[in-house]
Amino acid sequence: MLTLGQKKDIRQILRKHETPFYVYWEKQILDKIQCLKRAFLPKIPRSIFCYSMKSCFCPAIVQIPLNEGLWLDCSSGGEIAFALRAGASPDRIIYTSIVKQEPELAFAITKGIDILSIDSFSDMEKIYRVAKSLETLTGVLIRVNPAVDSDPRVESGVITTGHQRSKFGVSLWQNEGQCDSAEHLVREILSARADHLKLKGFHFHLGSNLLDVSLHGKAVQVVLNFCQRLRNLGLGFEMRYLDIGGGFPPEETMPISTWATVIEKALRETTQPPDFDLIVEPGRYLVYQGVLVSTVSNIKFNPYAGTIAVLDTGYHHLLDSILAGQTYRVSCLKQDERGGQAEYHLVGRLCDSLDEFTNLTTKGRHREQPLNTTRVGLPMLREGDRIIFEQCGAYSTVLNTHFNAFPSPAIFLVREDGAIDMVRQRTSEEDLYLSEGGDFL
Ligand SMILES: Cc1ncc(COP(=O)(O)O)c(C=O)c1O
Image (tube, rainbow, N blue to C red):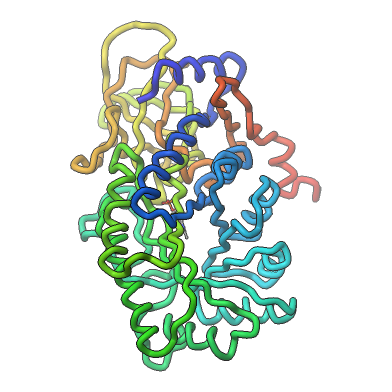
């Protein structure tokens, strides 16, 4: 729930700026960083925290975890360029992507990035080729698929990527006649490719907004048992890192300490004490508390759907609502205190019938309450009232689209001392026109 102070900040922004816009509070991100450290460090002192910048790569937001000493997880040459320009040190960047094009690899390796996560045999060959052409020794992790999945109940907003059929990583088990297995990659890197690749450990990532805390424990055990098997086969190497990815849901859904407890138990049962660093790589958990502020533009009545409030935003600003059935808590800022409650169907302004907000709540989501609602009870609305989508700071600004030639909204950051900075401007019509090739005419 938004605090009175946050509502005041939003009203202050509204005095000068039009909706829609996003707002983040620096203090909330700093608090989450502290929660993360407090949860993991006492249990697993050799934890390294790494912000997965795909969740929000606005440079001013990236700088917050960076200034707190976090590493960065990058998924493309573009994200690496952002990370470096935001001030990241190359030896604190991890480059993970299912495909890394050779120019991106050359850029990353030349800049000094020394932890590249290999996703397949062909990915390894590419990294090897580039490292060889640059006459360098490059550090790599192998991204493995631990084949663990959440319980079969499909929950909206939960994304899993460590299941058997996932496109990410390589199998931990031998695939007859296939080179895409972790053991085969280890053998290659430790022998034929040892002149330009140095194996530093393993990596997995199980999904996003996960609710099944046992998955991380199972995956840690599966990977560490695999390491033991390698040692038994005489394929030992100095394992510096085990990267367990991210995937943690908002603190309100499940405290981060629950995950730390399960992971520590899995480590304790498999290796004692761990002689490697554990990389914890959250994105969503650090930035989810950002909000999107919109305005009720039209109110209309449909005899079958009931009262429809049409907002000046849409799925182009909350694409995950369509892609992953993401859940949002909504609240409103009214122009006056006229009473009464009503049920609304909230829809966006795009010329697309998919542009309707489902999975809404005014109370927040708890594990026991999967949502599937298209209507939401709100104080009686008038045109001009504000609707605020809460907890949408992750995977929203980065997924903005320009459908219907709409600009990307501005992003505001409320600093710890209360100052409010516009850290991303709304795309101008001119920039949008040019980015679509307008200068060709
Ligand atoms: C490799 C990797 N690490 C970390 C993350 C961050 O996940 P989340 O934002 O759910 O914490 C992702 C997200 O997709 C990822 O692909």
